Image 1 (tube, chains in turn yellow, green):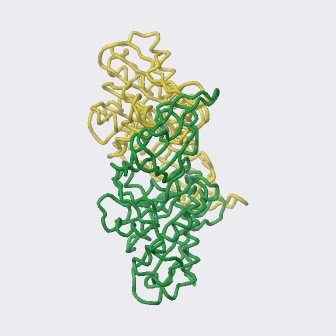
Image 2: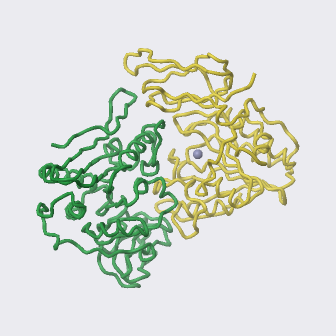
Image 3: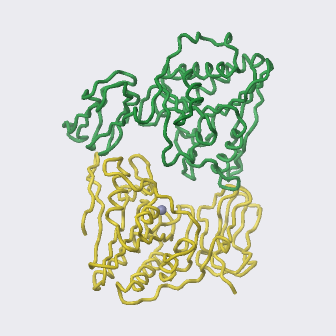
Length: 299
Length: 309
Ligand SMILES: [Zn+2]
């Protein structure tokens, strides 16, 4: 483990950005987690992968940065606690800039690799089935598929914003994908395992590790194949499914009831067969908030 | 009497409705422009909200004598203001990074969208803010770089500086970029009311309304000759001063005081021992536009802005 960046911090020990590196030469892979301090499912997954890498002989280089925002993680915070700035909006960073700009700069410098992965979780009020987010086309789609995570989501244009890590990686000419899984502020070990297996499968595909299967892709979708259910009105949302569950058309996904008194106000039903990819966890919901995403599975 | 109407109402999960309100003052003295004055996009800007209410009080007394329409939105982020916090709660988003908003999005997105619609056909938009929470600032107006018309109007805003700013990376998602010619007024201390600053900004706002022909000059409760003549600056003339060490920054200056190149802006001390770590000096001669008052700093934290003269 090496400290790739250090910055003194008032009232506490210095901030340190830690990197675990395995193997040498090409191809190279960099995997980052915990940029948002409370997203810990990915941290656990990356540590699982580190355990596997310690007892293997990788052919190529693997850089793991399991926890970027240590100070945020200490406090169950997404952003950098001092000034409440999002590190993922501070790229490409600046070595002479603010704290988050310095961290962003150091992180980008420490992760130059052929293939780069940034692992996130959902916000604390939603749970995400581990899935990989890739562009609409290009080599990254195939890399994403090779992970074998339950859902491959091809998305147009987004995440190209160069103030984010993935956009900065792509601007630097690296292939970059995002994994999203679990829920902010909580640990779901099964989701961590799925992500760890997906990362292992990616390293196998790149011949850095022996080939190993990922968990298995259930749905490979674009935006139009993701069924998004939003709250038609505010209320108390009671889910009737779990993330990862397969549903058929007409399946009851959940219902909204009056928070006080419990009158049933409306129901959500799946329109097509698919797998539940996103599920609202915090039950008090505003009108138009996302409640359920179902990734379509062709029959 | 002004027409008070909700621009949008946000239904809370528990059933309550939270409204963003517009107070419309419709003059009857003659035709004139429609001016939108928007405050409280962030919940930690009570100075702007105070100025909006003082403006409403004035306009209420002089409504018949107005030419044109003034729409005042005194508080656009009521749930954040309720907590004295910058961001919209629960969603934990900065409303000033969501513009132009989305009609079908979550509540803060819909509020941003509704406000964007509201100002679309305004002739002039003025946003009232406070200072950044960590700073004390001289009263200032921000306009877009190369927007000569807005800069000319802002010359009447009774501020120390009119800052013609280049757009930053997030500019497109801010309220001030939704309507060309928008003028932003800010000053004072973050999340606080500052003696004198509210009055300066209120008088500047009324003066700009008279320059726009909405308020009759004879109705102004002050003489225009008493107003400040701002210095117009671009980004190149506003120098950020940063610390190189982390610790406690102890400031020495006050906003708008003169400062020489090499003169200390303050010092950084070790927060545990109090030992001096760094003397932070101004790299240029000029005047202090902003001074950090929240003392905890990391290496690279901004502790002041100096306008070169
Ligand atoms: Zn995240």
